[in-house]
Length: 374
Image (cartoon, rainbow, N blue to C red; front, side, top):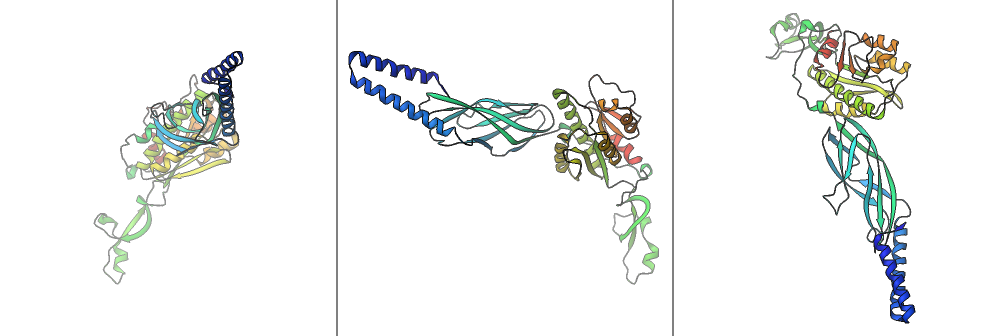
């Protein structure tokens, strides 16, 4: 706790008044100075009581969602004792790296922060230093508070990019059985006829043996898989800023892949390494895909064994060029359709003809079609 400029002037006035009253024997001034000193002491006690114990910060919504390079404002409350008498302001704020965090000065009566994320992904944690002042504003005390449960999800720009809806032709379908009805060659099930069904699929032999006049059709099995799996492979260590840029591109690329997969009528599985081991998430729409990408963005670096397992599970592998410095991993990745995230000053010797180097603007639809056609 320290004196404010106002507090220093206050105590100087009390001291000068006491000296003058003692020199000229003016007891009234002396009594006034003593009362001012007592008031200052009481004000300091109020400040000391208010800033002891558990001081916490609570947001109206501790889990915020915004768009990449967008802006979001959020208000919060500081929980401490004797809030009516003690004044508080934000002295310093430190948000997650990659997110510009500043106090909202347009709202002097409310505690608000402005968040401007530069990269896509999930950002966690927040710390702030607050200045508390006593009722007379003679003393001030600085306290730092950490908000560990604060989460900011920054949605990739590619999540809102328009994707041309296409379906592969039946002749271009791969050999992987989808376990759903479609335009393949294998028999799947029997269904009742409707005007949208081609007449060549009418099951005449079955109809001839039925007692009623219902028309039945043969439903063929689809050769498009029900789900395609995107695996994120991370084994290389990167600097803070380089990691943010790499993670941003990975989120953009995975979002593009997921949206293209949706246009084929498939669901998306996301597999990645976490603190609890490999994680598998299922996404059937954009909301689930967005949440999956956010969880994936805070995944961990994997070892060789877990990386091999993720590669085995993935239909499309998303990894970085630095990861290909490991020869065994480079050879394994080259055999799979792969989205390679650009790393600065990295030129691997093995890439493979099924890979696309992604810098943020590449079309990934051909990569998805290669996966379906394998």
